[in-house]
Image 1: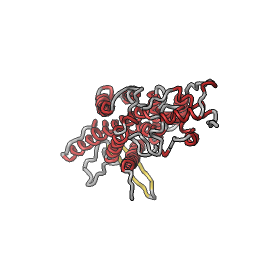
Image 2: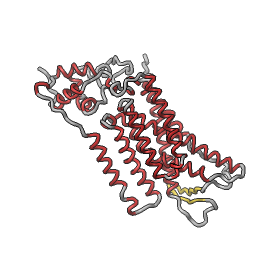
Image 3: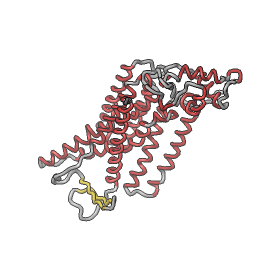
Image 4: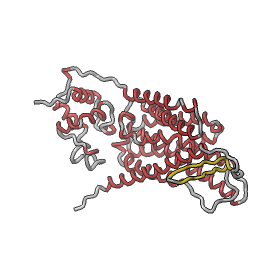
Length: 400
């Protein structure tokens, strides 16, 4: 008899597609930003060419040229870069549906944060994605969008405000993933609504023998640059569900701000280097990124350790009872939680020996952070978490 875990295979398929498409999109973004910044003016370049760049790869040499607006004559074959972005978003949103919408009660909703039902959680999510694009696009097209530095600050504050909102609606896990998904939606919308349409208008003007408008290329370049600088923060936010110390901290929306700052600074280093910048222009990024990273580590690591008095210390029987109450619905050979057909990560916590085996994971997921139980659906108390943590720190003694 063949037994196929259909749900797992569907999730794995979309995860793989998301990874493949994401690598392709990020790779093209990084390369074209490098190419744009590596352009140099040389004698003998055709009229209208902004600059050229020599590349070497795979045993061959490549000579790349960029036109200020477009060439006088359209080439017979033109390569577009858009499907990488589209499939990254399609696969990512499919995962959002599979994991966070279908499993909203486990992965998205935390009734201690906000007591909402599934349809409300999904509706807020969809509305946030749509609204964030209209706000961002409106800011970019306004007079504020003329100043790149000022625009960057406004977009940064907009993301922080959205992060604050998500952390007051969803579970920590769900909030962080939503921040990444929101930024990713803005990024792919830049491609779909601005970059590609502007390029099509430019091509049509050339075919009609007209002079393409300069602002079309400038606008596309601006949005492409935004996408490039947001890439590294989005990557971290999208894998944050594997690292509860990131999303299960108090004021985790500030973590988002630090992640964006660190990622943006690192990206600026490589972009500046590709532009041929030297000296002080390249000396500040890594020290600054390191300082902000240390601040991030200290911020998410700081917590008050509550000392449990000896008379209140738990024994192994108490710990087993707490774990069976709050954890075994998922972490069992046959979970009773409808969102799981098998124990997540293969972690079973049905006996005291199981608990001792996974003591370090329990400490990370349920004591140092509130990542588990998912959405704290079983209402595990701080006192219970502190008691288990104290028992683990004492070496997990077993009753005789």
